Image (cartoon, rainbow, N blue to C red; front, side, top):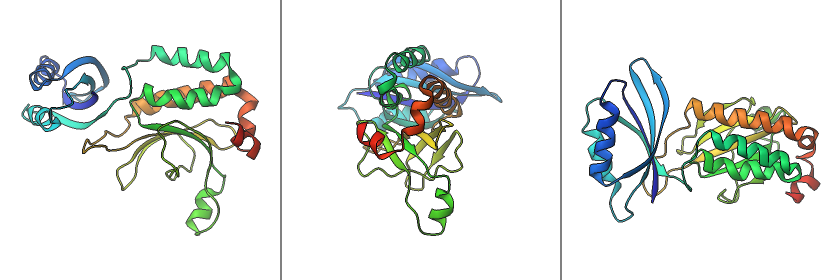
Length: 236
């Protein structure tokens, strides 16, 4: 089983090695480490590990909790092999090579890039926040959703449209980023599973989603303006 483990730790020599040794002793095989943040004497690191499916994750959490100054921000299942920023350019090249299916290509690929559960592109009415606040009006139109998206799809309150992380009271974590055309927004989600508490999206992850969305919007151009029409929704 592939897990993503997010840890906040002291930004000092030896701290990263101590966490890595603890993961190894617990039975985790580290395949990737990504530094998300280094600020104010603290660091936030993502470890992607291979974890024996028959072993309880509590053993891993207990080992990390015993390290002074270390905080576990989340442990969740990762989909596929870990990927880095180099794959972003490859994804955008695929979008450019086949713009007809460019939006679907982007939505299907983003969960794997960010160790998320699912993603969806939705068209948000300009007055959605006002109408829902008044108890009326229809919500966003889902233009395309990735294969792990739940049905029916519940979307968070994403207006005003701007790139940001969100956490709902029920525990779902989201990253949202607008395309800047016709109210189209990309929503990426993580949810808790099997008592594994997923981490919220870090600001660097939100920035990565926003950059991908902006680049895709430039590549796809006017094609995105008709995404919310019934014919376009049925086509994707």
